[in-house]
Image 1 (cartoon, rainbow, N blue to C red):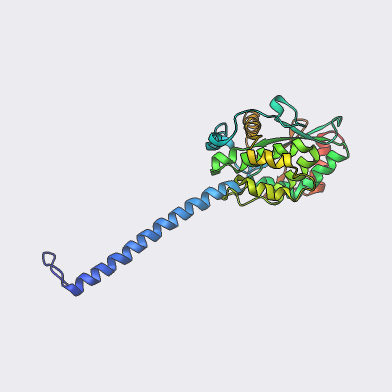
Image 2 (image 1 turned 180 degrees about the horizontal axis):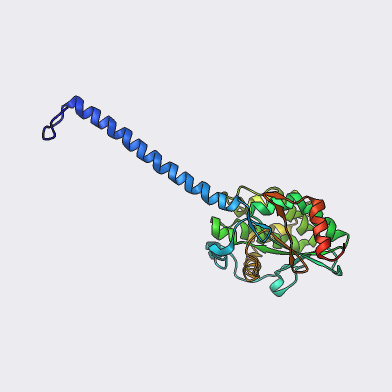
Length: 275
């Protein structure tokens, strides 16, 4: 081994160089692993079920609201409210019989994976309760996951929903269900692509009219979507999915498992005083 004050031999220098390359590769691999762990933790916060008051939440809105977005720069500014909506600025979409005595409020974000779990387990039950007149369903839609995850998929999907409800409430409900059934991984901004949203519209018979295609392509209802998202932010609801009957919050999950359709239906009727 060379003395500290001596220049190492060529053979020793080669050994030192090789060792340094190995050390540098190990350092870079540690950095990459650390980045991967941070990504996994971030995604887990979204996918994990945070049980708050018995309601499973995909993620809290505490990270910030969605009242502004980089997408605003390329979206139209003129406010167009779609037909078949209600509430201030038409921010509520109601499905079911208008004279139903009880109201089921559903708060969702199209990028929310827990919302997808709820819809898969109880979407049909919600539809049946609305169609038999037990409740009318008010949809309050959010877009806060765009800010928390990056991208514009929630807002773009919401604008496309505006085009769907303009075609009819039944078209809205069918398209709503298709979006959840085909929800992309929340790490990907799949709903940010209007062409993908138009492809999914093919799954709803009669939805893809010329007017619908133009509205989705031109983002006609983007300003309305922003109003809808802002209304959610101002609602006091802190996460999605949240479901209420006549203002009373329901339990949607037991542990990490969604309630069965039978359990959910019984809970709705009990909250409404129907059993």
